[in-house]
Length: 257
Image (cartoon, rainbow, N blue to C red; front, side, top):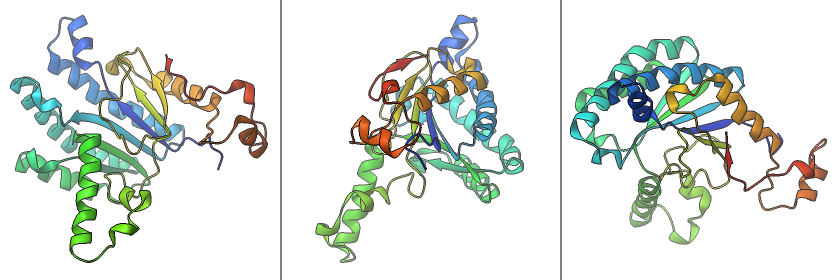
């Protein structure tokens, strides 16, 4: 496996409200269109051989939005789970929802559990981050380790990056190789802070409802043109990977589509 293997793509789906506003539509109409786009991008990922797709659907900070919008988003999320579980199962996709579920209604929590159970045998993984925050994720992992230390199950001196990683939301999955944000904003908004330490960043101006398979392919192609060093020099990477071109290196650059 080369350093440019693309196994896991994470996407911050941004731009639904702006997309709807440009068309004189309600914000929830934009979110509905965005939900439809998930199906297309999941299929595109499978066509590209991507093993894991993680989508930022609702952040822990999004509770601050107008109550009407939050309620509509929760209803849309529950509708999506019920409508798409069968289709995901048919396409061999395993659904995994990460985040703090305690603030969701009992009916939404039940829909999540049922959708995950129904799709548990899928080979490709779709992760939906809902009521999720990167800082929350790290704090939760630290708390779990602290509980193990308190119970005498773990010596604090043995805690390292590997043990902490095993307690995070994406434990058992490869770290994201490519983090995409749509909508033209250039920030990661508290998303997968631990897991994206070495992810390549790609910022697309396309609003999420307009982000299609061609846009995803452009991001993947850009990823494959980069040289990922992971602390090594460009010459080292070039020697280790046949056919690598050091002159094409762009690690660390922030790109716009």
